[in-house]
Length: 451
Ligand code: PMP
Figure 1 (tube, rainbow, N blue to C red):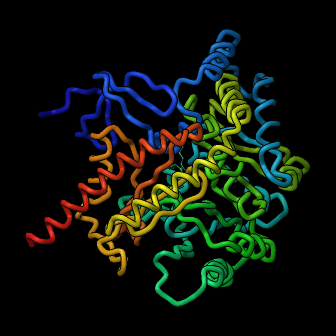
Figure 2 (figure 1 turned 45 degrees about the vertical axis):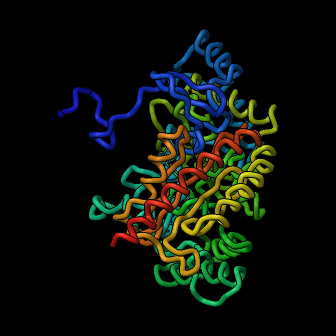
């Protein structure tokens, strides 16, 4: 039957339940069904749903003023948020520019990187190097930087740049090298790409500290990002860390890069920064970059209608305060360890669970035909979709991360509950996952018997 809805959904013919309300890690639809938000929506609702302190702060700001345009007024909430994020960020990452989405945050970093070089007379330094198996956003420019084969596919003729190097993915490395050596090898690919393209043409390198939706929480080898930083410094290339998913405590530290004590030149933030209470994101840059522009043209020639509007900044400020007041970064680290322990038990039990990985509460499970050979399922078998749908019907929401193997195969999910999650809630998540995986494994083996 033709859809009666006046709203266009991404999957146009899908019929989704209507959301009613949410509290903590739970969401409720209008029929009264309860769901565990096992992936914080799109790894976004980091403090859980219906947090009173944030709702009160939103009301308070709305009662004063919701919108005042950025060229007419500045606001206390906006200044306080900038200061807070600067305190959270490492090194001299002290200057924030506010945008509305993660895509805009990575694109903004890309634009300012080019401007930084232009201000110093390096007009050819325009190109950005990125990695295959990455996602930096959905605008044409941010998608150009993304190495997500499936998402690029239909628009590839419009995309300007393309990724130039591989991401480290040790689980699928079939050579006999140590993790450390593999990490260095992967990082050194950046140097090779710089030689091929010419440092004089390259403005920046962009990477997700831990690969999110395009790989399923793939953690880089230790030493990888240290070497990346060294190469960027040696060839005068700025390093943009896309912390849209990994930032604000999601991985058990303030930011993903903090796991290796690496300080990038830019960080793109989004998602957990406002935890879904308002659509907002930020690009943070170092004092050094800021100064070159401040004492140069003195102008950032970019921005959006809603950049830094008081309603959103007051909301984000309340979210970040809530994370601090409730020690959620620490909780993310501790509960993440517990969650991985439980997921590893599943891995040991089921043939189709090939790998469990992650840091803090950003975790991935990769599904394979055989644990020993690591042979992936055909994409057409739809294993990720099967897992997601079965989990959803049992009241657990998890996030798909399929197609990591050059867009041709690769089944994985993200398990990334709100940072407020408790041990008991983790047990609820893993006991549903256990049933789901058992069912899928049985169905898969029945099919293999039949054919
Ligand atoms: N970068 C990363 C690492 C992301 O995970 C995402 C969103 N999944 C984006 C950028 C784009 O963010 P948005 O959807 O808010 O534009």
